[in-house]
Amino acid sequence: MMDINEIREYLPHRYPFLLVDRVEELDIEGQRIRAYKNVSINEPFFNGHFPAHPIMPGVLIVEAMAQAAGILGFKMMNAKPSDGTLYYFVGSDRLRFRQPVLPGDKLTLEAQFLSSKRQIWKFNCTASVGGKTVCSAEIVCAEQKL
Image (cartoon, rainbow, N blue to C red; front, side):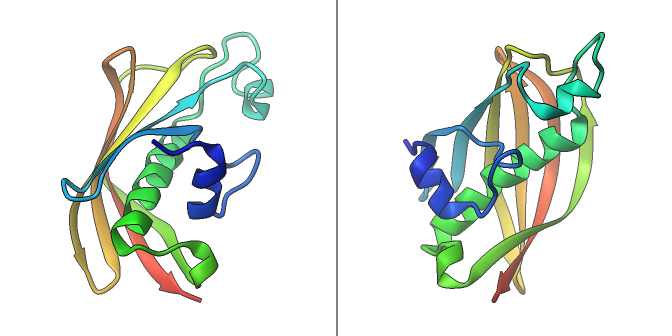
């Protein structure tokens, strides 16, 4: 389990772009992570997306999955941004949205390591609410030394 203070050591993002609130499970040997984001009506994007029917933008759901995958990648390498290593989200394959994410939802983020080749890492990711998958994708990240 990782709380927000430890998460901030592994992700360079800050409000309003830090989209992982807590890591519930981290299995380095099994190369998987389960984390979550509590979706609140106070999120700044709900002011415009959409005021009469607020839903979390899909691109931010994908970003949240990428951040969970980034934590897993950093933990697998035993590295942190403060060590001069960053992960850039560079793409996604097989991206699918299945239902909207609403204020009050607990967005569960899961990532499973698939492969790495020449500083390009691939993760199989899902986002779910109440056990139902709302989004899935293969997330591609590039490891960059600063």
